[in-house]
Every structure is written in structure tokens, then in C-alpha cells.
Length: 258
Image 1: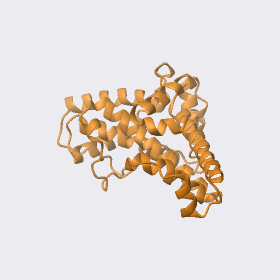
Image 2: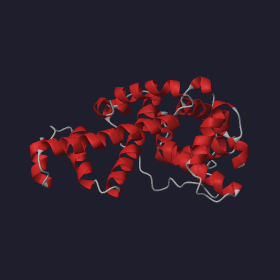
Image 3: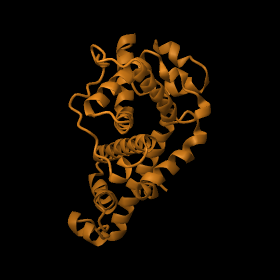
Image 4: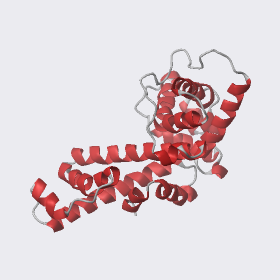
């Protein structure tokens, strides 16, 4: 699965694959190194929904970690799953979920005591503890759990990127205003702190300035979120559906991206 062959591939699957290759352009040009980097990237972005789905299917923590490793190595990497992505299905994670279901069915049919984690594992999950999910999600279907875990992971990634960019650009106070006024009230389920209190806390001259700082970070959040969503779908036509999915699970966060 060389880089050139992948990026030259036609169709929407090729475009999606090219997007992911572009995220690891700094990696060595050797095929093995790039393949490991690509699978590492996908593991980082999708291990949590895959793991949570397998747990909701009845597996314990160790079984779920083992099967998650096996799925990414045997199906995503060895069978070149990204190259087979179907634009008609729109969302890569829906395609991934279908492949995961088939993989689990095959594993069940061939049930053995052998560990499925490949030799020279690409990404270690040994230190991972069971994911903490809200009661409303742990009581729902495996499919709902999968989508919730994917969205929560996406939002964590987006917020980390926005925060890092604010620090990098000397807008640390902008981030603090957003964190105190928007983020913590959502995550802690508390009432938003007033702009007056925020101004006093950080020595900001006037609520109008604090409001503008807040708007700046909200715009950054929206732009970064939209970019991540574009990276997760095979066609732009499905972006609105992704936003609606976020609104369904995280209505308060979705409101900040509008």
C-alpha cells in the first residue's frame, strides 16, 4: 500500500485516503513507516468508538482491547479498508462500523483462545481503562454507544487544537474566557460565569472586550470543528448530518458552533 498508489486511486475513497495521507506527510517515505503512521492515526481517532461498541456487545475490558487491536491490524491495515470506502455511505465511521460487525461475526465463528493482538502491535492499548460513559449512553444500543464515543473523541480533539492554537498565538486569556464562560458550564453542568466576573478575574478592561474575545474563540472552534468533520466524511453532502448528530448527543456544544 504505497503512498503514490493510494493517492492516485480514483473515486471518493481515494479522496478520503488522500486526506489522511496529508495528515502524516512528515513521516518517512518508506512504505512500512507510512503504513504504521496511518494506522496509528486511525487508531487514535477511532479506537474509542470501536472499543466502546465491542464492550456494549458483551465483551470485558481485556477482550475489547484485544479485539480492537485485531480489527485495526487485520481489517483496517491488512485489508486496506480505507481504499474500499464507499462514497454512497457518506460517513467513514458508518463504513467502519459495518466492517467491524463483519469482523466480530467472523471472530465469533472462529472462536479460539488465541490473542488477536498482532506481534509488534502498532498502537498499544494496554494502559487503557474502560471508558467512562454517561448512564444514558451505557443503557443504549451498541450502535448509539459507537457514535457517541466517536463524537466525544472528535470534540476532545477539536477543543485541544483550539486551546493549543490560542496559547500559540498569545491568546491564552481568550481561551480562559471561553473555558470559563462556555466550556466548564457545559461539562460541569453549572451556570455560566458572568462577563463581569471574568473581567475581574483576568483583569480584562470591559465586558465588551471580553465578549469579543469569546466570539474569537467561538469562531475558531466552529472552523476547526467543520474541518475535522470534513475529514470524517467522504462527501461534503453529509456535513449537515454530522452536525445534526453532534446536536443530538451534545446540544450545548453544537449551539456554540452555530
